[in-house]
Amino acid sequence: MNVRVLLAEDQAMVRGALSALLSMEEDIEIVAEAARGDEVLPAALDAFPDVALLDIEMPGGDGLSAAVELKERLPACRVIILTTFGRAGYLKRAMEAGAVGFLLKDAPATELATAIRRVVKDERVVDPGLAASALSEGGNPLTERERDVLAASADGATIGDIADGLYLSEGTVRNYLSTAIKKLGVRNRVEAARFAERKGWL
Image (cartoon, rainbow, N blue to C red):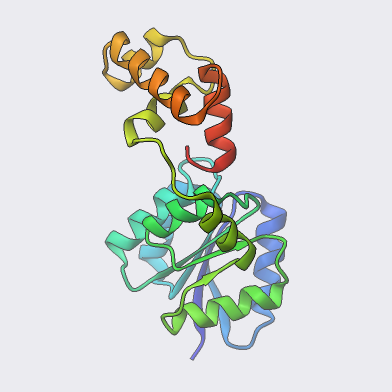
């Protein structure tokens, strides 16, 4: 019996290449494709895949949010995150979102096919270098609210803009930013946002 796969990737050329490579495997069938994060759940509910291969950064919602939705609505579908971004923070967030696999796009195609077969057998598959990096780095020191405030400030928004967007007072926003800056050992909120983003914490 073929493993039914949903492929979510915003770059058409990459999506086409992955689809072609996986379709060459006798036991793997691509049953749905999505170019945006908000297309993943509708496509999955229509095709009922065994495995969903999700990119992290896509328009219309990221792969981590899509993984949470799939876990809630289609718990039998196993999620593998396939990304360019080898960040330890992303790995931790992916596992928290219900993913059972985390691979980098530069992995060989045969490795991806093997990973698909393994997760169907209820195994976890994680890029070994990234797993080692995640263990050595430790966890994300930021609270959920500190992450929200830093993410909102990443594009250079004012304190007032952030406060309005998150329904907080300006004083509360300043407190969260100050605490985050101290935790990360940087000089200002711009550096804090960049540092946290680089780690995959935002």
